[in-house]
Length: 119
Image 1 (cartoon, rainbow, N blue to C red):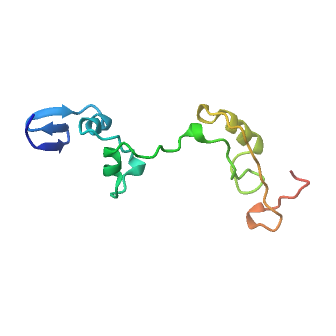
Image 2 (image 1 turned 180 degrees about the horizontal axis):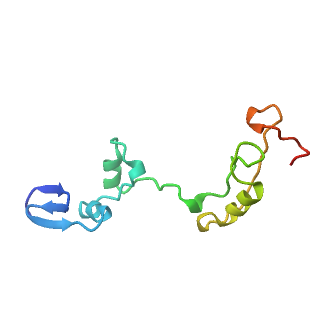
Image 3 (image 1 turned 180 degrees about the vertical axis):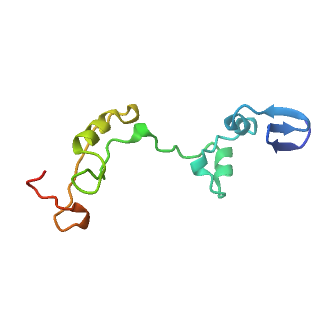
């Protein structure tokens, strides 16, 4: 097949023939490239790495094991500790193995009037 490759709003063409148009992934595959996730598009070496199929795997929700920095209504947050604990069990269908809660020390400005007795 001959012709110049052109990327137009309706798809990837080689000459006048439409090669791929359904998804971005199809367009990358038509050029023999690994799909480049938006988070990896930095204008650096990602195209060369995609040609070698050597792009890193992005972190996904399933890679997370816990949430470590949360603010509750006991300080300056908007949810109770109970609500947040329940959310760690059902967040996006992911069950976290390490739900954690921390409290600010009494000298921290965002601790408001939090005391050990109020916990």
